[in-house]
Each structure stands twice: as structure tokens, then as C-alpha cells.
Length: 213
Ligand SMILES: Cc1cc2nc3c(=O)[nH]c(=O)nc-3n(C[C@H](O)[C@H](O)[C@H](O)COP(=O)(O)O)c2cc1C
Image (cartoon, rainbow, N blue to C red; front, side, top):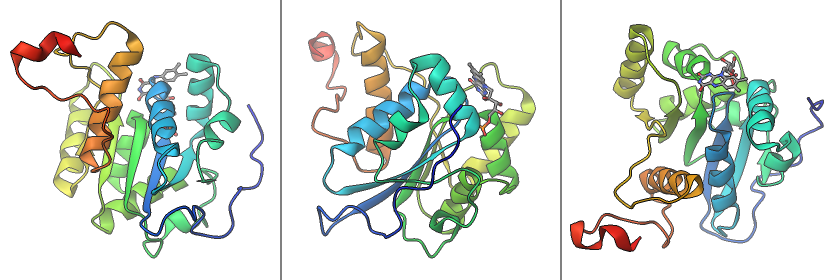
């Protein structure tokens, strides 16, 4: 595992390309499914109106490498700014930092339960807590199965607090042919929740068009 180098951005905002910037925090934890975080970052990276802030947990770094062969540096390269998960003095730890939303993709049970309990023990969990307390959209792509009652109670608490619980559960009505297509549809659904869906987003238009993609 890499040592944490210093964060790359010190002045904010960091994306001067647009006046109308959507500041998005993306968290990647150690749950299975780091490909979701990767594709989310890839898709948002190319948008001129999105400023991307990345928090990658240590377990996220490990799982991402095991599942995709990608290093933390590869993930960081897709963000305008990345923040060490241990850095509780990051701007993201404060409600005064004007973020427009946060997605944790994928979200582990560890991180999900900590957010539900209000335990802000690292920057990922603190930034999510701040997102909730500031009444900003928080999307959690929680990945675990099966779920015990404690998990379900924590998820219920999060829904009551205003979080959007969006487990990466694929739909099959577009007749996906590859895993990449499944991932794509799931990521597009999450972007849709934030009002950031691109023109490529596929929508159900009725049974007559089901096989047309
Ligand atoms: C290959 C691999 C797959 C894992 N899959 C999951 C998973 O699907 N869901 C989950 O909650 N934890 C999963 N874990 C365990 C988490 O990585 C572990 O609980 C970790 O402490 C989460 O820390 P974080 O929330 O700070 O990233 C997995 C671990 C590994 C190594």
C-alpha cells in the first residue's frame, strides 16, 4: 500500500473551467465493487461543470487493488482534489465548505454504520455526517449481503436522516450483455439521483423498446 503523499490541491475552487460548478465529494471504501467508484469518477471527470473531491479509505485502496489492479494514484488522478482519509482538518470536514453532494461508491457496512451512529472517526465519515447535517444529498451505494437486523436498522436510521440508500443492485430490463453494462446502468442511476445524468443514460421506455438498448 502506498504512503499518503501530500494532497494535490491547496486552493479552492480547483476547476476554473466553469462558473457553474457542482462540487461533488466521492468516497470509495473497502466494500466490494470499487469499479462503481472508478466509473463514477471517470464519468464525472470529463464534465466541465463538476469539481471532484475524492476520499479513498485505506481498505478502499486495498480492495480496489485486489478487484481492479488500480492503485490509489490512479483514483486520485481522476479527481480535482483528493483528501487523505486521516486528515480531519480537511475543508471537507466543515459545513462551511460549500459542497453540493456526496456519494460513497461502494459503501462498506463499517462506514455506513458509523455514519448512522454519528461516529465521525475519519474524514470519509465526517464528510458524510457534514453532508447530512447541512441537508445536502448523500448517496450511499451500500454493498453487503445478506444483511442482519443491525445493518437494516442502521440503514433505516440513515433513510430517516435523509440519506439516499442506493445499493448497487443491477436491473436487467435493458438486457445487459456485459458486466461493464451492468456497472454503467447502476452508476447512471446514481448520477440521476444527483441531477447529473448524462445523455447516455438509458431509461425504460416500455416493453416495445426493451431490447433496443
Ligand atoms: C476483497 C474484499 C471485499 C470486501 N467486501 C466487502 C463488502 O462487500 N461489504 C463490506 O461491508 N465490507 C467488505 N469488505 C470489508 C471492508 O473492507 C472492511 O470492513 C473495512 O474495514 C472497511 O473499511 P472502510 O469502511 O474504512 O473502507 C471487503 C474486504 C475485502 C478485502
